[in-house]
Image 1 (cartoon, rainbow, N blue to C red):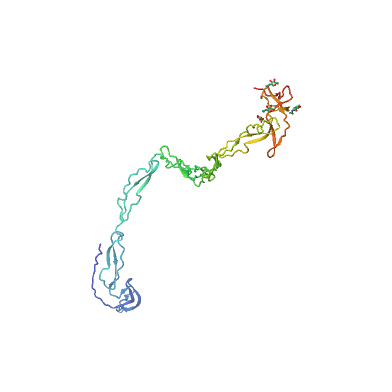
Image 2: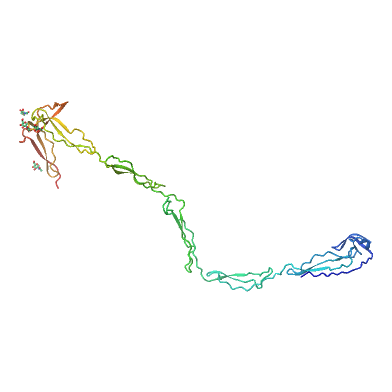
Length: 446
Ligand SMILES: *[C@@H]1O[C@H](CO)[C@@H](O)[C@H](O)[C@H]1NC(C)=O
Ligand SMILES: *[C@@H]1O[C@H](CO)[C@@H](O)[C@H](O)[C@H]1NC(C)=O
Ligand SMILES: CC(=O)N[C@H]1CO[C@H](CO)[C@@H](O)[C@@H]1O
Ligand SMILES: CC(=O)N[C@H]1CO[C@H](CO)[C@@H](O)[C@@H]1O
C-alpha cells in the first residue's frame, strides 16, 4: 500500500506584538521543549526575544516558549509496524514549536511489512494401515505413517507430532536357527617335518577344522547351513630343509687295465654326488670302488715246461761192451721244453745231462739180505686185514772207485743196469722173503 498522501494545511497568521515581562532563559531545547540557563525575570518579552535562540516563561507555572516564531520540530522515529507478518502500517510524528501556528501535518503514516508471509501450521492426514510385520517368524516391527498435508504448512510452518509410528508384532512362528561357525580348532601337525628343496607338490601343509555348531542349524524349521569351508589349509611356515640322502653317480673307470695281457681287473670309482647328502641325509650305501674285468685281447706269454727225463741211454764206452768191467762208461738222458707260447720263456736248465757209469747189466754179483722193510699198508680198512713186510736180496757192488777224473773235475760214478744177484737162501728164497701179519682192531665191515 503506498504511503498515505500528506494533507498540507497552510494557515496564514499575523504577528501580534504585545510586550509584557517574562522569565527569560538563554536556551530553548527544541527536543525537550524546556527552558534552560535562567537569565533573569522582569524582562520584557520583546527584549528577551531579541535573540531568537532564547526561551521564556510568562510566569513560573507557564510552559516554556521559544523566542523563535512557530516551526515544526524534527520528525520522530517511525513507530513499530502494526503487524509482525504480511503488510501493516506505521507512523511518525512532529511537534509545532513556538507560540503560534505551524502549517502542515504533525503525523505521517506508511505501509510496512516485517515478513512477506505469515506462518501457517500444517495438519496431519489420517494414518496409513499398519505395514506387514518386518519378519516372517518370531517378533518384529510394523509401521504406519501419515502425511503433513491437511493442510500443508506454509511460510515456515510444520505439523506437530511424529510422521510415523513403530509397533511390535508377533508372527507366532518359531524362527529357524541358522548355522554359524564355531572357533577354528588348533592347527594340525604339518604333513611333513621339513621342506623339500625341489620337486612337485612338496610344500608341507597343515590344516585346521571348525564346526557349524555355534549354533547348529535347526532341523525344524530348517535353518541355513554355515557358508564357507569347514577346513582351512596353509603352507607350513619356517620348516627346516629335508635331509637329502646321497645317491651314487655313475661309475668311472680308471684309465688302463691292471694287466698288459689277457683279462685283468680294473678299478671303477663313483662319487656320492647325485646328489650329495645334504641337511643330515644318509651317505651313499656301499663302496665307492668296485673292480671290473678288463680284456686286453692280448694273449699272455706262456713259459716252457720241462717234460720228465727220458730213460738213460745205454751205459757204453766208444761202443765197446763194458758190462761187468771196471771200465767207466757214459750214459745220457734228455728232456723236452714244451708249451712255450707268445714270447714265453724257454725252460731254465739243460735239456740233456750225462753221467759216468759202470754197466753191471746181468753181471753175477754176491747179494746180501736187507733189513726188514717197514710194515706195509693194511690190505683193507675193515674186518680182517693183513699187512706185509719184506727183505730183499741186494747186490754187493764191486769195489770200483766211485769217483773218477772227468774232463775238468772229479765226477761220481754210478752203477747202472740190473745184475744177477744171489743171496743165501731163506726158506728156499734167494731174491725176496715176505712176512704177513694181521691188522688188529679194525672196525667191522658193514
Ligand atoms: C692173512 O694171512 C693169513 C695167514 O698167512 C692167511 O691165512 C689169510 O688168508 C690172509 N688173509 C688175507 C685177507 O690175505
Ligand atoms: C750194458 O752194455 C750192453 C752192451 O753194450 C748194453 O746193451 C746194455 O744196455 C748196457 N746196460 C746198461 C744198463 O747200460
Ligand atoms: C747184455 C750183455 O752183453 N751181457 C753180457 C755181459 O757179460 C757177460 C760175461 O762176460 C755175458 O755173459 C753177458 O751176456
Ligand atoms: C765177485 C766176488 O766178490 N765173488 C766172491 C763171492 O763170495 C765167495 C765166497 O765168499 C768168494 O770166494 C768170491 O770171491
